[in-house]
Image (tube, rainbow, N blue to C red; front, side, top):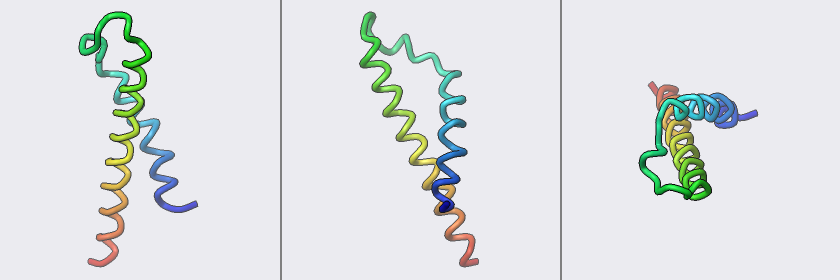
Length: 65
């Protein structure tokens, strides 16, 4: 497995766990459950992508020093 795969396996559950602390129900309209879930998933994937790329770039650049 590559380092990015390992990072995704660690980061995605961590981001899911962290997002459980955020109450996003007040942002969305009532009876818009599916739209809220889709938005939640997109935010989850975007955050995971950004965190994994940050750690991967940090790892890649630290090998040069």
